[in-house]
Amino acid sequence: MSNMASPFTNAADLALAARHEIISMTSIAKASHVASALSVVDILSVLYTGTASISPEKVSEPDRDVVILSKGHSASALYSVLALQKFFPKDWLAHYCENDAPLGGHVTSKGVPGVELSTGSLGHGLPYGLGIAMARKKSGAMGRVFVVMSDGECDEGTTWEAAMIANHHNLNNLVVIVDRNRIQSLTFTEDTLKLEPFADKWAAFGWQVQTVPGHDHELLSNALASKTQPSCIIADTTKGKGVDFMENSVLWHYKPPAADDVKKAFVQLSENY
Image (cartoon, rainbow, N blue to C red; front, side, top):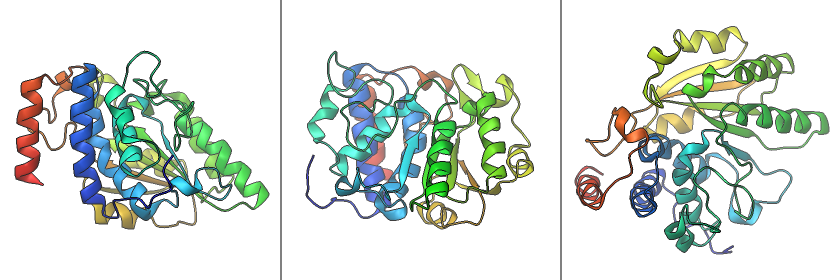
C-alpha cells in the first residue's frame, strides 16, 4: 500500500479516470456489470475525494469513516477508485477477475486495502453497516458509516429491517446512498418489484431523505453533510452513464465491452468530460 498522497482531490477528475479503468478492466476480463459501475462511480468519487474521512493512511484507524459498497456487482467501480487513490497498486486492475488475483468479480475484502466487506449477495451491506454504526454509538467512537446500495437491492427484506432498527436507535452516523438507476438484472426495477413511492418509504421508516441528481458532484457532496437522524440519499443516476450506447440499456448489465466498444467509449469520454 502506498503512503503517497492521493493524486485526486477533485471528484470529477477521479470519476473520469475511473470510468476509463472500469471500461478497460471489464473488457480485458470479459466481465459483467460495466453499466452498473458507470452509474455508481460518481457517488464513490465524491466519497473518496474528501466527503468520507478515509485514506490509505487511515484504513485501520478506529475513528475512520467506513464506506461499504453493498451493490458488490459494481466491484470494478470501487476497485478503480481505490487504486487511483493509492489504496493498493494500480496494476492490480489489469488482473481483475483472474484466478488467484486479489480483485474478484464482486467486491472482495480479503487482502484488498480499503474494502470493508465482501459483497454481492444483495441486502447484506446495510445490516453490516448498521452494526458498525450501533457499536460506534454505544462506545462513543467517531466516524460515519456510508452504505452505497442499488435500488434493486431494496427488494430485500433485510434492507427494511435494518432501516427500522436504525431509526429506533437514532443512528445519525449512518448514511445510505441508493444508486437509483432504475434497472436491475434483466429489466427495470418498477417491472420487477415496484419501489415507488420510494422516498416516502424511507421517510416512513424515520429516515431523513433527499433525492439528488446522482452525477452532480456538488449536490451529492452537500447532501452528504452530517445529519441529526439516519439519512438516505436517493441518487438519481443513469445506468452506463458517460457512454451513450450503454446508457439506460438492460443489455449492459451483463455484456462485457468488446475492443471496438472500448474505443468508442473512450472517444465519448474524451469529447464529453
